[in-house]
Length: 453
Length: 67
Image (cartoon, rainbow over all chains, first blue to last red; front, side, top):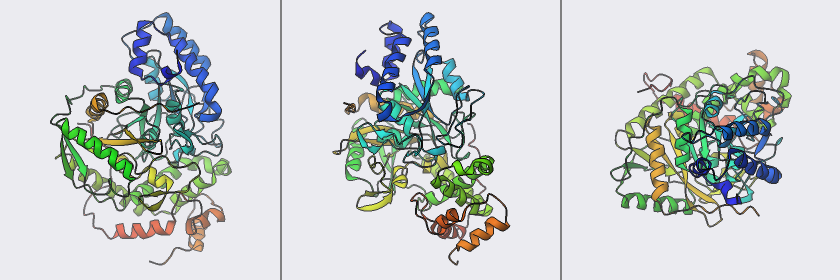
């Protein structure tokens, strides 16, 4: 296999495996070589499980089931997911010795589907933060520019797929932690309707906002993973772009945004219009206090989970996460409940928008990948904390629980990917992924591979 | 609403129960330096605006019903 094969989508790898052009063992070794070669650069993995992966690949090759598209496909997951016998560290010193007793439900499901688990990905400690910086395991850089962030909190998952170290990865998304790093690294990031993919066996950050999601090279690959991860997955009702009604938010999502990102999304909008989609301006719920509402839910929930470790191991947490947890202690119960009531109003208001349209289109992020170490980024002439900017267009949909998918739609003159985001009705996950798949099939844009020389 | 004081938060820590945060961490809430939290006072000011909005009988968000 040549190096670009490391960047092949699951749909192509499945054909090669089925045709016998490559064996599961050969595919695994190809990735294993790259992981070793790029380990110091990508900082994508916290731990590897290649011995078990090799044993499974041998079993698959001995009795290959061609009808299963995930058979023999190597994948990784963020180090919040339990895999039996391996430490689930959360990217923290606190749980360095936390050996999982059993697999997370999603790991069991992918295992049954024939996918091969190869390792645990780096992350922002316990998923607290969108920059993906990690003082213990290092900060995964962006493969398109190693001086910039891969983004987070699923930083290692994004780096693993975008550096060509595995075919796909699992992450968690509490405010955009799957979709944003995928967008910054030129991948497809999908978060489902809240609760649609199991979070059992996954270390929580904020129970009522956490979603398990996927990072893949294509929407077609996201569909394959979704089918394996969700029992009773339905066939999509989307048959084409012609006649699709797409909502374009009147405010917030196209404001304080990099002009080249706006240009790319507007080109995509023109394409969709020409393909027969009907684009309609929609009034979204008020976004003014959404970050406040989200933080007021997140921090008490995070504290409530981490309380079990604070007394014995509190000094092992990083300074910034401890400060966040301290904030969780100081909020009043009524403030938390009130925030949850605002979440309910956001859900109702957004459901009303979906009475008018099939899907909503926004840019995925207002800025390209920020430089590593940058506390603030300049967006459209004004400074903003880097983590806030990365998730400004994504976090609202964690509160409302609507499914959302980000996918590449352009390249910035700085040499970094630009992405768009589609959002769908509750439980329309299959149709949403299919819409993104139809766009990637016919939209005249091909993302260049990162130059890793 | 008055500005939150470090001593108020220390009082909460010492008198209401909960984890014993260090003084430096409480200082971070009233004088943020780390960049991730933009300041507890800002958050409280915004929560005070939200408190004055009448949500009528809207309950807290719960699970999303399966169709």
